[in-house]
Amino acid sequence: MAIEILMPALSPTMEEGTLAKWLVKEGDVVKSGQILAEIETDKATMEFEAVDEGTIGRILIAEGTAGVKVNTAIAVLVEDGEAADAAPAPAKAAAPVAAAAPVAAAPVAAPAAAAAPKAAGARVFASPLARRIAAEKGLDLASVQGSGPHGRIVRADVEAAKAAPKAAASAVVAAAAAAPVAAAAPAMASGPSTDVVLKTYADRPFTEVKLDGMRKTIAARLTEAKQTVPHFYLRRDIELDALMAFRAELNAKLEGRGVKLSVNDLVIKACALALQQVPGANAVWAGDRVLQFKKSDVAVAVAIEGGLFTPVLRDAEAKSLSALSAEMKDLAKRARDRKLAPAEYQGGSFAISNLGMFGIDNFDAIINPPHAAILAVGAGVQKAIVKNGVVVVGTVMSVTLSVDHRVIDGALGAQLVNAIKDNLENPLAMLA
Image (tube, rainbow, N blue to C red):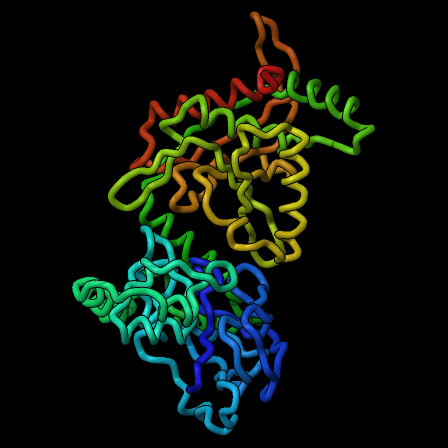
């Protein structure tokens, strides 16, 4: 029986992708786990693995095709001994309506035959054939342990599992039926229409720049964040003279190990420790509740051509400065090469955006939901400051903490930004 290979959701935010390159051709025999294609998501180019064995009967989407919706059929796999011409023609290979419709209310499009997620926000990974068999058996895929690549559920797993109660199966059908309704919700207004703008500037020379997946995602997510997250802002000036002397001393001692700490490394450490010192602020907004974390997972904005990544440094409070520095350099390099895995740039409870290196004195950053706060870091500049009644020259850095008022109130936010300031102005204590 022919099996449709569907455009996968390679990240929770992916709704469509570009089929950059096929690594197989029609007639090739493939095995489970074999790389079939390279797919460009909104963030990176990733490899797509086969989850079933068989022969590529027909390729439905040509390489280089952009805007392919998640769960659209991109190829057909036929079983051993089955004629390749048994595969449906491309015109007849459209994905089911429920599968092709992106779910606007959730970050990931819901597969038509997929069961309810294993946990809130989690996605069940299963082969198309496994989904089909599960639907026939009334089986809840969330209760099945996958034995395929990366824990993906394959045919053998669902054949060996017992059918779920009818009530659970009914819930799956209801969820699938509701998906097109959510997809039909009108998009949020984002300014004048394209036609209006084009008419306005019709008499001026310009070049149109088409939006790629990353730019579209940034536009949608940050528009939503600014419209739905109640931001407020807390600003502090931080004296850096002690920090700069501390950094110079450490770098001199670490030179033999090839380690060179940046101010940004020290800011990351200061924020990670501050989240431990003010645990109520180490949280995210989860719709109808707040999740408070025990570890400090700090995301750091990295500018790349055409957009940005926010790789996450997990357990940052427990790592040494040299370990944080090495990890940050590795993540930043792979971010610029678009080689980060989704797990490396998703999650975290707090973010840092540092534009000081570009000479920006201060700015207000937009929170990246579901984070509750983001620290905007400006440049360190020499200013006149008063110490013990005497005016002296010191290096001062301005920071602005953007806060989600649903999670963090003013007093709690003030405690967090003050803890960050204390850590940076007393850097030796960060080693204690």
